[in-house]
Image 1 (cartoon, rainbow, N blue to C red):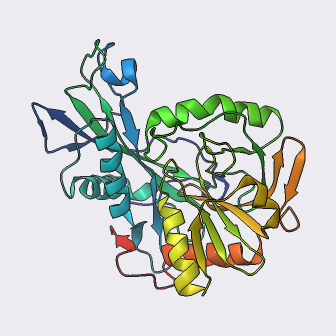
Image 2: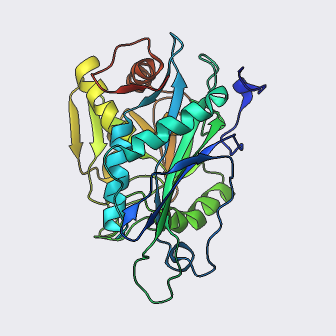
Amino acid sequence: MAKKDIDWENLGFGYIKTDKRYVSNFKDGKWDEGLITEDDKVVISECAGVLQYSQSCFEGLKAYTTEDGRVVTFRPDLNAQRMNDSAERLEMPKLPDGKFLEAVDKVVEANIDWVPPYGSGATLYIRPYMFGSNPVIGVKPADEYQFRVFVTPVGPYFKGGTKAVNLKVSDFDRAAPHGTGHIKAGLNYAMSLHAIVTAHAEGYDENLYLDPATRTKVEETGGANFIFVDHDGNLVVPKSTSILPSITRRSLTVVGEKYLGCKVYEREVLLSELKDFAECGLCGTAAVISPVGSIDDHGNKIVFGDGKEMGPVTKKLYDTLTGIQMGHIEGPEGWVHTIK
Protein backbone atom coordinates (compact mmCIF):
# COMPACT_ATOMS: atom_id res chain seq x y z
CA MET A 1 0.00 0.00 0.00
CA ALA A 2 1.07 3.61 -0.54
CA LYS A 3 0.32 6.87 1.19
CA LYS A 4 -2.90 8.59 0.14
CA ASP A 5 -2.56 11.23 -2.56
CA ILE A 6 -3.05 14.27 -0.31
CA ASP A 7 -1.45 17.71 -0.24
CA TRP A 8 -0.17 17.02 3.28
CA GLU A 9 1.57 20.37 3.75
CA ASN A 10 -1.58 22.37 3.11
CA LEU A 11 -4.09 20.44 5.21
CA GLY A 12 -6.43 22.41 7.44
CA PHE A 13 -7.83 21.22 10.75
CA GLY A 14 -10.97 19.53 9.47
CA TYR A 15 -12.60 16.13 9.03
CA ILE A 16 -11.63 13.87 6.15
CA LYS A 17 -13.30 10.46 6.07
CA THR A 18 -10.75 7.65 6.27
CA ASP A 19 -11.12 3.93 5.57
CA LYS A 20 -11.74 2.27 8.93
CA ARG A 21 -13.00 2.98 12.44
CA TYR A 22 -13.48 1.02 15.69
CA VAL A 23 -16.81 0.29 17.39
CA SER A 24 -17.60 -1.41 20.69
CA ASN A 25 -20.93 -1.65 22.54
CA PHE A 26 -21.73 -1.85 26.25
CA LYS A 27 -24.86 -3.90 27.03
CA ASP A 28 -26.06 -6.00 29.94
CA GLY A 29 -23.27 -4.66 32.11
CA LYS A 30 -20.30 -5.48 29.91
CA TRP A 31 -18.37 -4.34 26.83
CA ASP A 32 -18.21 -6.55 23.74
CA GLU A 33 -14.91 -7.31 22.03
CA GLY A 34 -15.22 -4.46 19.54
CA LEU A 35 -14.44 -4.51 15.83
CA ILE A 36 -12.96 -2.54 12.95
CA THR A 37 -15.53 -1.48 10.36
CA GLU A 38 -15.76 0.58 7.18
CA ASP A 39 -19.21 1.89 8.17
CA ASP A 40 -18.93 5.49 9.37
CA LYS A 41 -22.64 5.88 10.16
CA VAL A 42 -23.95 5.88 13.74
CA VAL A 43 -27.52 4.55 13.99
CA ILE A 44 -29.28 5.14 17.33
CA SER A 45 -32.76 5.64 18.72
CA GLU A 46 -34.34 9.08 18.51
CA CYS A 47 -34.57 8.86 22.31
CA ALA A 48 -30.93 7.85 22.87
CA GLY A 49 -29.41 9.14 26.11
CA VAL A 50 -26.80 11.19 24.27
CA LEU A 51 -29.51 13.05 22.31
CA GLN A 52 -31.73 13.74 25.32
CA TYR A 53 -29.25 14.48 28.12
CA SER A 54 -25.87 14.95 26.41
CA GLN A 55 -24.29 11.92 28.05
CA SER A 56 -21.03 11.80 26.13
CA CYS A 57 -17.29 12.22 26.52
CA PHE A 58 -14.36 12.15 24.13
CA GLU A 59 -10.60 12.30 23.78
CA GLY A 60 -8.15 13.68 21.26
CA LEU A 61 -4.64 12.48 20.43
CA LYS A 62 -2.43 12.18 17.36
CA ALA A 63 -0.37 9.64 15.48
CA TYR A 64 2.90 10.85 13.98
CA THR A 65 5.54 9.58 11.63
CA THR A 66 8.90 9.89 13.36
CA GLU A 67 12.23 10.76 11.79
CA ASP A 68 13.16 7.05 11.62
CA GLY A 69 9.86 6.12 9.95
CA ARG A 70 7.92 4.71 12.90
CA VAL A 71 4.25 5.54 13.45
CA VAL A 72 3.72 6.53 17.08
CA THR A 73 1.31 8.12 19.53
CA PHE A 74 2.22 10.35 22.45
CA ARG A 75 1.36 9.26 26.00
CA PRO A 76 -1.91 7.53 25.03
CA ASP A 77 -2.11 5.93 28.46
CA LEU A 78 -2.96 9.36 29.88
CA ASN A 79 -5.78 9.76 27.35
CA ALA A 80 -7.10 6.37 28.41
CA GLN A 81 -7.06 7.37 32.06
CA ARG A 82 -8.69 10.74 31.37
CA MET A 83 -11.48 9.11 29.37
CA ASN A 84 -12.23 6.78 32.26
CA ASP A 85 -12.21 9.76 34.63
CA SER A 86 -14.73 11.49 32.35
CA ALA A 87 -16.87 8.36 32.11
CA GLU A 88 -16.92 7.95 35.89
CA ARG A 89 -18.04 11.56 36.46
CA LEU A 90 -20.83 11.18 33.87
CA GLU A 91 -22.04 7.80 35.26
CA MET A 92 -20.84 5.99 32.16
CA PRO A 93 -19.04 2.62 32.20
CA LYS A 94 -15.26 2.67 32.33
CA LEU A 95 -13.32 0.92 29.60
CA PRO A 96 -11.49 -2.24 30.70
CA ASP A 97 -7.72 -1.99 31.09
CA GLY A 98 -6.05 -1.94 27.69
CA LYS A 99 -9.22 -1.54 25.62
CA PHE A 100 -8.66 2.14 24.81
CA LEU A 101 -5.04 1.59 23.73
CA GLU A 102 -5.93 -1.51 21.73
CA ALA A 103 -8.70 0.36 19.88
CA VAL A 104 -6.44 3.31 19.07
CA ASP A 105 -3.65 1.06 17.80
CA LYS A 106 -6.04 -0.97 15.64
CA VAL A 107 -7.61 2.10 14.03
CA VAL A 108 -4.25 3.70 13.25
CA GLU A 109 -2.95 0.43 11.77
CA ALA A 110 -6.11 0.05 9.70
CA ASN A 111 -5.60 3.57 8.32
CA ILE A 112 -1.81 3.52 8.09
CA ASP A 113 -1.81 5.06 4.61
CA TRP A 114 -3.54 8.12 6.05
CA VAL A 115 -0.71 8.87 8.50
CA PRO A 116 1.07 11.96 7.12
CA PRO A 117 4.75 11.61 6.22
CA TYR A 118 7.50 12.95 8.48
CA GLY A 119 8.28 16.61 7.92
CA SER A 120 4.93 17.48 6.32
CA GLY A 121 3.65 19.37 9.37
CA ALA A 122 0.51 17.24 9.33
CA THR A 123 -0.57 14.49 11.75
CA LEU A 124 -3.28 11.87 12.04
CA TYR A 125 -5.80 13.12 14.58
CA ILE A 126 -7.46 10.37 16.63
CA ARG A 127 -10.91 10.88 18.13
CA PRO A 128 -12.11 8.27 20.66
CA TYR A 129 -15.58 8.96 22.06
CA MET A 130 -18.35 7.33 24.10
CA PHE A 131 -22.07 8.06 24.34
CA GLY A 132 -25.31 6.77 25.83
CA SER A 133 -27.02 4.83 23.06
CA ASN A 134 -30.28 3.32 24.38
CA PRO A 135 -33.61 5.20 24.79
CA VAL A 136 -33.76 7.32 27.96
CA ILE A 137 -36.74 9.59 28.67
CA GLY A 138 -36.47 9.98 32.44
CA VAL A 139 -33.48 11.95 33.70
CA LYS A 140 -31.05 9.14 34.48
CA PRO A 141 -27.92 7.51 33.01
CA ALA A 142 -28.30 5.31 29.98
CA ASP A 143 -28.02 1.53 30.29
CA GLU A 144 -26.21 0.98 26.99
CA TYR A 145 -23.23 2.79 25.48
CA GLN A 146 -21.14 2.86 22.35
CA PHE A 147 -17.39 3.53 22.24
CA ARG A 148 -15.97 4.52 18.88
CA VAL A 149 -12.63 5.67 17.46
CA PHE A 150 -12.10 7.38 14.12
CA VAL A 151 -9.08 9.16 12.62
CA THR A 152 -8.57 12.01 10.20
CA PRO A 153 -5.42 13.67 8.82
CA VAL A 154 -5.08 17.29 9.92
CA GLY A 155 -2.87 20.33 9.62
CA PRO A 156 -2.37 23.07 12.25
CA TYR A 157 -5.31 23.86 14.56
CA PHE A 158 -4.86 27.61 14.10
CA LYS A 159 -4.48 28.78 10.50
CA GLY A 160 -1.32 30.72 11.29
CA GLY A 161 0.47 27.68 12.69
CA THR A 162 2.90 29.08 15.27
CA LYS A 163 1.98 32.71 14.62
CA ALA A 164 0.61 34.52 17.64
CA VAL A 165 -3.13 34.41 18.35
CA ASN A 166 -5.16 37.16 19.98
CA LEU A 167 -7.68 36.55 22.75
CA LYS A 168 -10.39 38.36 24.62
CA VAL A 169 -11.46 37.94 28.23
CA SER A 170 -14.86 36.30 27.93
CA ASP A 171 -17.98 37.50 29.70
CA PHE A 172 -19.20 33.89 29.67
CA ASP A 173 -18.20 31.07 31.99
CA ARG A 174 -16.78 27.85 30.59
CA ALA A 175 -17.57 25.69 33.64
CA ALA A 176 -19.50 25.85 36.89
CA PRO A 177 -17.93 25.61 40.36
CA HIS A 178 -17.84 21.91 41.31
CA GLY A 179 -19.03 21.13 37.77
CA THR A 180 -17.50 19.23 34.85
CA GLY A 181 -14.72 21.55 33.74
CA HIS A 182 -12.06 19.02 34.74
CA ILE A 183 -13.34 16.28 32.41
CA LYS A 184 -13.61 16.06 28.62
CA ALA A 185 -17.39 16.10 28.36
CA GLY A 186 -19.06 17.14 25.12
CA LEU A 187 -21.41 19.40 27.07
CA ASN A 188 -18.47 21.62 28.14
CA TYR A 189 -17.72 22.38 24.51
CA ALA A 190 -21.35 23.01 23.64
CA MET A 191 -21.37 25.71 26.31
CA SER A 192 -18.36 27.39 24.68
CA LEU A 193 -19.74 27.57 21.13
CA HIS A 194 -21.66 30.83 21.50
CA ALA A 195 -18.66 32.43 23.18
CA ILE A 196 -16.22 31.40 20.45
CA VAL A 197 -18.55 32.53 17.66
CA THR A 198 -18.88 35.86 19.45
CA ALA A 199 -15.10 36.16 19.81
CA HIS A 200 -14.53 35.41 16.13
CA ALA A 201 -17.15 37.96 15.11
CA GLU A 202 -15.26 40.55 17.16
CA GLY A 203 -11.94 39.70 15.50
CA TYR A 204 -10.37 37.46 18.16
CA ASP A 205 -9.02 33.93 17.78
CA GLU A 206 -10.18 32.60 21.15
CA ASN A 207 -11.52 33.41 24.61
CA LEU A 208 -9.81 33.53 27.96
CA TYR A 209 -12.19 32.10 30.54
CA LEU A 210 -11.99 33.18 34.18
CA ASP A 211 -12.81 31.09 37.21
CA PRO A 212 -16.60 30.93 37.53
CA ALA A 213 -16.70 31.63 41.28
CA THR A 214 -14.78 34.93 41.54
CA ARG A 215 -13.97 35.80 37.89
CA THR A 216 -10.53 37.00 38.96
CA LYS A 217 -8.37 33.98 38.04
CA VAL A 218 -7.23 32.62 34.69
CA GLU A 219 -8.57 29.19 33.77
CA GLU A 220 -8.28 28.15 30.10
CA THR A 221 -9.69 28.75 26.63
CA GLY A 222 -12.43 26.71 24.99
CA GLY A 223 -9.96 24.09 23.80
CA ALA A 224 -6.53 24.62 25.38
CA ASN A 225 -4.70 25.25 28.64
CA PHE A 226 -2.57 28.31 29.35
CA ILE A 227 1.13 28.46 30.10
CA PHE A 228 2.98 31.64 31.08
CA VAL A 229 6.67 32.54 31.26
CA ASP A 230 7.81 35.22 33.67
CA HIS A 231 10.72 37.63 33.13
CA ASP A 232 13.08 35.25 34.96
CA GLY A 233 12.32 32.44 32.52
CA ASN A 234 10.16 30.49 34.97
CA LEU A 235 7.17 28.51 33.70
CA VAL A 236 3.88 29.39 35.42
CA VAL A 237 0.83 27.14 34.91
CA PRO A 238 -2.67 28.05 36.15
CA LYS A 239 -4.07 25.65 38.73
CA SER A 240 -7.78 25.06 39.29
CA THR A 241 -10.14 22.17 39.93
CA SER A 242 -12.23 23.21 36.90
CA ILE A 243 -9.38 23.21 34.35
CA LEU A 244 -9.13 20.20 32.04
CA PRO A 245 -5.82 18.43 32.82
CA SER A 246 -4.16 18.77 29.43
CA ILE A 247 -1.69 16.00 28.59
CA THR A 248 0.35 18.47 26.57
CA ARG A 249 0.48 20.89 29.51
CA ARG A 250 1.54 18.17 31.92
CA SER A 251 4.26 17.12 29.47
CA LEU A 252 5.48 20.69 29.03
CA THR A 253 6.00 21.09 32.78
CA VAL A 254 8.31 18.07 32.69
CA VAL A 255 10.11 19.38 29.59
CA GLY A 256 10.52 22.81 31.19
CA GLU A 257 11.97 21.44 34.41
CA LYS A 258 13.96 18.40 33.23
CA TYR A 259 15.12 19.48 29.77
CA LEU A 260 15.33 23.28 29.94
CA GLY A 261 16.11 23.76 33.62
CA CYS A 262 13.16 26.08 34.23
CA LYS A 263 11.52 26.47 37.57
CA VAL A 264 7.89 25.40 37.23
CA TYR A 265 5.10 26.87 39.33
CA GLU A 266 1.60 25.42 39.18
CA ARG A 267 -0.58 27.92 41.02
CA GLU A 268 -3.58 30.19 40.77
CA VAL A 269 -2.93 32.96 38.24
CA LEU A 270 -4.76 36.24 38.69
CA LEU A 271 -6.04 38.18 35.70
CA SER A 272 -4.46 41.27 37.22
CA GLU A 273 -0.94 39.80 36.97
CA LEU A 274 -0.99 38.93 33.26
CA LYS A 275 0.75 42.21 32.46
CA ASP A 276 3.75 40.96 34.45
CA PHE A 277 4.44 37.93 32.25
CA ALA A 278 6.92 37.93 29.38
CA GLU A 279 5.31 35.14 27.33
CA CYS A 280 1.98 33.38 27.05
CA GLY A 281 0.94 30.27 25.14
CA LEU A 282 -2.00 27.96 24.60
CA CYS A 283 -1.22 24.27 24.78
CA GLY A 284 -3.14 21.16 23.82
CA THR A 285 -3.09 18.13 21.55
CA ALA A 286 -4.38 19.98 18.51
CA ALA A 287 -1.98 22.93 18.52
CA VAL A 288 0.85 21.68 20.82
CA ILE A 289 1.65 25.32 21.65
CA SER A 290 0.19 28.42 20.03
CA PRO A 291 1.81 31.67 21.17
CA VAL A 292 -0.55 34.35 22.47
CA GLY A 293 0.23 37.79 21.10
CA SER A 294 -2.30 39.74 23.11
CA ILE A 295 -5.23 39.46 25.50
CA ASP A 296 -7.93 42.14 25.46
CA ASP A 297 -9.56 42.67 28.84
CA HIS A 298 -12.50 44.88 27.90
CA GLY A 299 -10.33 47.49 26.22
CA ASN A 300 -7.22 46.97 28.32
CA LYS A 301 -4.87 45.21 25.90
CA ILE A 302 -2.02 43.13 27.31
CA VAL A 303 0.72 42.36 24.76
CA PHE A 304 3.29 39.59 25.17
CA GLY A 305 6.70 40.12 23.56
CA ASP A 306 6.39 41.64 20.12
CA GLY A 307 2.80 40.39 19.89
CA LYS A 308 3.58 38.44 16.73
CA GLU A 309 5.99 35.58 17.29
CA MET A 310 6.61 32.80 19.80
CA GLY A 311 8.77 33.94 22.72
CA PRO A 312 12.22 32.35 23.28
CA VAL A 313 11.26 30.09 26.21
CA THR A 314 7.99 29.04 24.59
CA LYS A 315 9.91 28.25 21.38
CA LYS A 316 12.33 26.00 23.30
CA LEU A 317 9.40 24.24 24.97
CA TYR A 318 7.71 23.74 21.61
CA ASP A 319 10.85 22.54 19.84
CA THR A 320 11.74 20.12 22.62
CA LEU A 321 8.29 18.59 22.99
CA THR A 322 7.74 18.21 19.24
CA GLY A 323 11.29 16.87 18.98
CA ILE A 324 10.37 14.14 21.46
CA GLN A 325 7.13 13.43 19.62
CA MET A 326 8.81 13.24 16.23
CA GLY A 327 11.63 11.03 17.45
CA HIS A 328 14.76 13.16 17.17
CA ILE A 329 14.98 13.91 20.91
CA GLU A 330 14.87 11.06 23.40
CA GLY A 331 11.94 11.51 25.73
CA PRO A 332 11.15 10.05 29.15
CA GLU A 333 10.45 6.35 29.19
CA GLY A 334 6.94 5.48 28.03
CA TRP A 335 6.11 8.82 26.45
CA VAL A 336 6.29 7.62 22.85
CA HIS A 337 4.19 4.57 22.02
CA THR A 338 5.14 2.80 18.80
CA ILE A 339 2.28 1.39 16.73
CA LYS A 340 4.18 0.35 13.61
